[in-house]
Image (cartoon, rainbow, N blue to C red; front, side, top):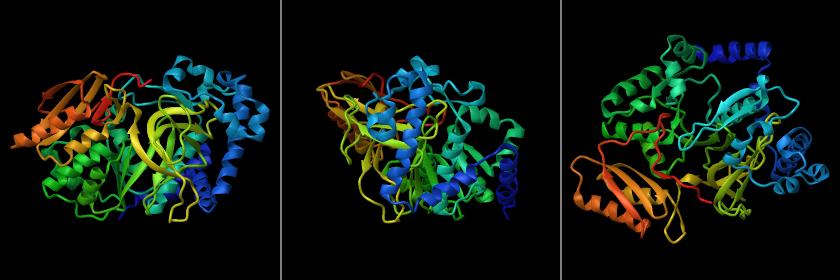
Length: 450
């Protein structure tokens, strides 16, 4: 019997609310109530929050002073927002303190940073209200699967900060008894370790598993190969932080025999969308406005077309970033969900803009094209391709045991055809390690797209 769950929900959370003014449960309840709103009501709610945010930016944020028409911000806030140029991470990092609200003390804010897996990490600040709304958006969505803040979980994770702390006994106990979760280190997934991890999962009996899509896929593949499917019933496996591809979802579902749920969020954007049991991705519309623009021209794209995603956080008035480019590619959806929830939908998430390759003739090619070549070839155990320039790329690949040479050649020819005319250095290796966080990316472009 899980005694930690009722302790967290009936003792710990109420005490946090009493002593620290924690509002996560209040915000979660508020967001759940918003599910009954229709599209027009959601638009009105966001319009009010956007107008208030733009007014604060115009009056108290140096980076936006003189760039926002205060009258337009009150009367037509969406129009006022679109008059602002998109904010790239590079531009933000040139003068981050200019985005701080002059009425807010930095020492009262929560310092954070992105993972920086492909470039320099972005350092930024959030206020407590924003962080709690981020968490509320997650718990609102997980409630659709019967998961609550006290639900026991296993995290397949790998942040170097978290892992170094996890080695400390006190922190390990805090994770287990105050958060009701244990961690399986993402960097240690080797075939020999899988039986031990499966036994750990069975013994711990979590309600759900949470982790990076690439790592969950790697674990699932090893579980299936060794016929070690856990003998417990999970409410869900939640994939986060990376693009979840269909072949990954299929393997994870096969390994754990439960729903596979896609969470879309970012440290510098919060929980932006969540997959509901019916399948569509619901946008956390009360927390953020999402726009899709052409990745080169920044011109708005019509609903349904894939482009660069811009995020405006409606809650963070302490360090607001308007029309902020997270670096992700997505498309919005104009349809409604069969579940009846009124939040707008994402049509698709297509990975990072860094996954977009540039052909020698100037065409944009999504990195997932290389996955399409490899996915049905058992000879290819793992690969990673890095595009150095439109003329040059480096492909590293790992072969499976007894790999058929004709399949290997099919893969190499397929990669060459995708980047026709480019010089591709092809290197066979014994292993391709993930980055320090535990994530693994198949395709990486190492030069600016625009």
